[in-house]
Image (cartoon, rainbow, N blue to C red; front, side):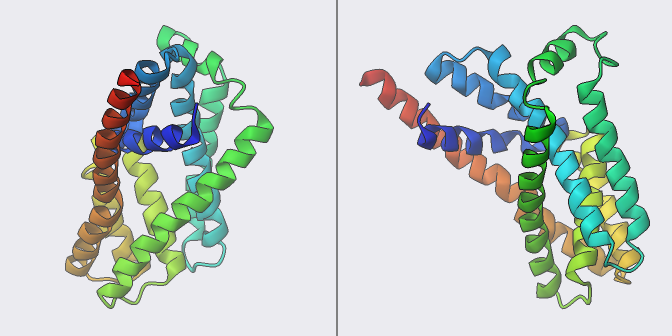
Length: 229
């Protein structure tokens, strides 16, 4: 398919950011089926692979940064452990008792091969670091004395905790984790931690949703143009 349409469909999937563990991003499969007759069974495993590499990318980023951030290493190691658990569950047959999960896991086996898994996880780590930079800009904007390293650990651990809660968008869990970690690691007062958490979530989670809605509108227009051409 054209790279331009692949890009808009990917961005449109960001509307699923507020779904449990971002599984709503399977919307991309529906858009691919509508415009290019790609079977959902063929494209849905991509979403599963993305979630696995997200977890590994976050874990890798947390460990790399946690090595140089005072007091962050234990949290980094816990995050790495959770990321490895997610990857192992996706590669093993432990969840095959659920037929839909079994089909997705089997179909994504090629994507979860070691070479592709490593490459996608590195790309995911870079992507998540950009979000951590956004979070740090919010921290600096409020004049809080939290380093980029500690901000990265706080953001990554909170994001993974929210995803593992399976609450849509990790709402409540991610925010509570972020406030608590800013208070513990950065010595930030709880009111200031709450304020910066609101800013960070607006600049990352909700900004992504707005981008997704805009891209979805563009994709609908492109699809109608494709049908009439």
